[in-house]
Length: 260
Image (tube, rainbow, N blue to C red):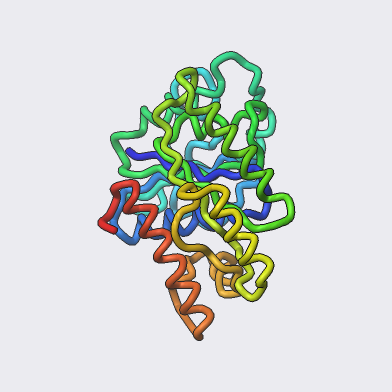
């Protein structure tokens, strides 16, 4: 089971929207997918309503307990399950010895049932609360959506420094930094496009090809709990569908889950 973390410490960068679309794309390609929501707000969980007659399953806070899992992930459909975010995540003490590595251990116990695990993280990078750090310790790769703003260069530098800490032998030296993903870009703003080009010069190949524009069609699709490439109407919607499919296919191909 390949594990992909979606991470950025800044709110509004589009982490949950990216996680939703990657998971939906994987499901469409018949990839056995486990969705893990580590945000106490559980926004990603809301995009995956329970299946008719399904039972509640393992909650995300249990992934930080120092004991074997006592429940299974909630089944959404054949080959697709979710571990929902819950408010108890707020009570996890990152200073407790070993807590940051428990997620990795528990996900290994589920690895035989899935091909891909998509992990959505809260808007923080630190060891306390430990959710983002634990996701990075557990992950094989990380993708970092970011929007362009006045303070984005400094925020991205801080994020990159934190990822380097995680890649040390003490945590997860095998973590692959798939890259930074330009997200929610206002393509009608010359200043924003210019700022993005400056960031590309600053971070080079760390910024992955393509970008995701700020489009109303994306917001409407997320509110409906579906990927933006479904039920396409209009030129703007079509443009959004192409952008998101291209990026999701790139990510899944990079993970080895489909041919690019």
